[in-house]
Every structure is written in C-alpha cells, then in structure tokens.
Length: 96
Length: 182
Image 1 (cartoon, rainbow over the protein chains, first blue to last red):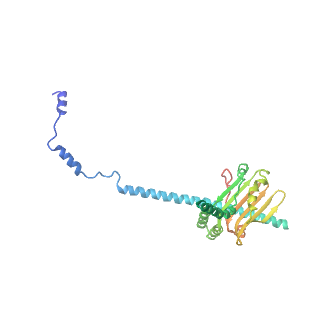
Image 2 (cartoon, each protein chain N blue to C red):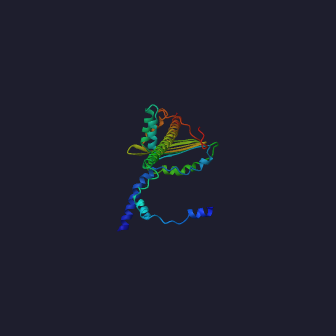
Image 3 (tube, rainbow over the protein chains, first blue to last red):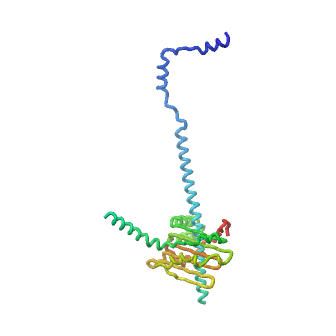
C-alpha cells in the first residue's frame, strides 16, 4: 500500500456511531461549570493588598504634608517672632 | 417676587462674607520680588495645614512640652502668610510695592500698634482685635536689603510669639531659592 492509499484510507468519510449527537449534547449539559481562571482567594488577597497599599500611601502622603506644614509653620512663626522682637528693640532703642 | 427673594438672599450672603474678607489680609504685589531676591521665603498655611502641623509638632516633640507649646500657639491660628525677601543689593524694592498691603491695613478694624521709621528702614506692627482679643496680626519689616511681610489670622498672644525662641522652637535652616539650606 502506497502513501496515497494510506492517506485515502485514513481520511475516508465515516458516519458517526448511532446516538453520537445525543451523547455530545448530554455531555455538554452535564459537564461541570467552568472553573474560574483566578480563584476567589487570590482576588481577595489582591484587593486586600491594593487596599493596604492605598491606605499606606495616603497615610504617608498625609505625614509628609504634615511634616512640611509643621516645618513651614515653625519657619513662619520664627520669622514673625524675629521681626516682632526687632520692631520692639527699635522702639526701645529709640526711646533710650 | 422670586427675584426680590433671590436678590435679598445674595445680599445676605455677601454681607455675611464681608467681615471674613476684611479680616483676610492679602499680601499682593510682591511676587515679582522673588526673582530679584537672593533668598526668599513664601509660606501660606491655611487652617487645615496648621492643624496638621500642630498635630505633627505635638507628636514629634522630643520632650513633649515644647511640641505642645508650639501646638498651643498654632491652635488659635487660622492662617499664616509670610513673604520674606533678602537681596544682594539695596534698592531692589520700592515702598510703593507695599501700598496694596498698607491700604488693607488702613481699613477699620486694623490698628497700628508699633511703628518704627528711620531713614532706610521701617517696622510696622498691626493688630486686629475683636472683643479684646487679637484676631489678626501683621508685620511689615522693610530694611535696605530685606523685606518681610507676615500676616497671621487667628488668636495669638504676641508675648508668646516673642518668646518663641525661649519655647525651644528649633532653628530650622531656611531654604533659599535654589533649595539650599541656609
């Protein structure tokens, strides 16, 4: 048997066995629900991690802002104090 | 009828806003000086930032008391604005530059409590009082090579402010324009 005959034999049309269509439909109906690609646990962990990152970032940002504000406030009060005392000194100097 | 009601409502809202607007001293007309200045300080803190700053200072106070004292000083404040410019040479600003600020300080409610004028420098301190309490405070300090304007809104004891160094407020290096600490 040459190659051409082998191929013809292998690829010859064959009718399905009786009840094939019914079996396919039955299998399709009875098969379990498709499994989720990512389990719920991983989703929960991802959400928790995102929340943790979000809260940490917000806290860090607020801390940075507060630190910057306190730095500015101290500088501002220091300048105000210096200029207040300078004005008082000038008045005292002038009176003396 | 609706128009009259609306007009009345708008007028009432505007009238309610007026005292707050008068109290808020706007430091205007000095922004161009930052370009000429060798060093400049531009600080604007509103009440929420001051609250955060007070909390931070109290929490970060090394010995507790100092942090609380500064926090106490900040607690009564609603806003702080500071513009300070140091120049290499004299004549970098004109007294007229201060006129928009002085004009606001001439409005009713503000009182000049200290004024020291000499040939080339002047110091003026203004307060705004309500029911015997200082609720606003402004300083204009003009020197040949330095100009500083401070506006503080809120209740503040000037004696406490003048004692600030004694309270242990650390001498924080002031960054210059290039961000270098001085």
